[in-house]
Length: 335
Image 1 (cartoon, rainbow, N blue to C red):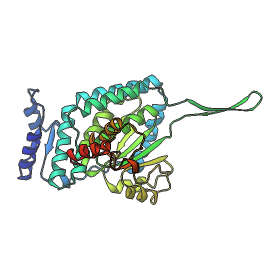
Image 2 (cartoon, rainbow, N blue to C red):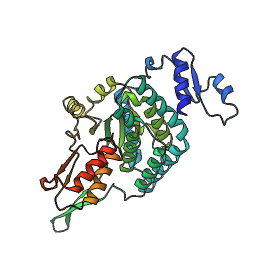
Image 3 (cartoon, rainbow, N blue to C red):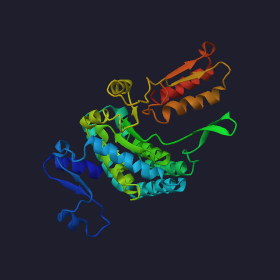
Image 4 (cartoon, helix red, strand yellow):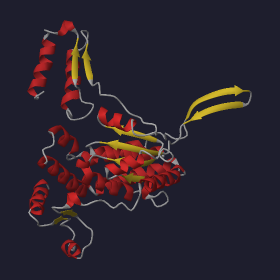
């Protein structure tokens, strides 16, 4: 598939549009020539095309709120079924998702993006199956809505209860990782929230197909506008002004991104500071266990935002065989 995508990019860059579609459907070529919207189109001017702006930022947010209220009216089993349908839809459309993701990756590589960003952008074989499995696990977890968190007897026969409930409409800004879109959307559905998503421009094609697949699995009695996909920076600026419609902004990315959003909106922001991904080995630690933890924390997925950044060790271990073994193992892996 990677070879096909690269060949399509070369051809389209030279001025020949290319459509990659399923070879199993006998009428694919005929349908493409008829102008039907199937497969993936590669065109040299695709980066210049502007998404439709028929829907304003406010309309998108209001639609998400209305759909979220329909979602909240469903039972726990109703929301669970939506998630199970989403998992099935992702697996059924894996080939299309892979095509779009590989196109994003090829474009990022040609543009000279850092290897760590390309790594986060890439949806490797097995990723869709892993995401579907995680969604099914989430679907079968305890319902997060209407859980009694605290009960206080204020007076005789008067009890005050604190219960969990949906927040309303969430605006989540994230970078690079298209699999984050799937995770965020699944959590929003399970918790009964409307959602507006803005991913990194380098993952535009991946995010678009994932959004299409997920919203396609949402039933009509809730509405596919439950989850809106924001496609431009201008829309973000408009959305950050909608403190009467959007209930919470969650930026996932650099400290700079979080700070910029906090300074640009009156909407509550759930942000974070710089990551502190440290591992500490005490002098009393089991060094074999410490080695397994350190290697897993760094080697399993070095590009992840929660990968180990700093290894701290007790001073008494500085010249110990156990520490030397860990350092050698890290060097062997190119760390």
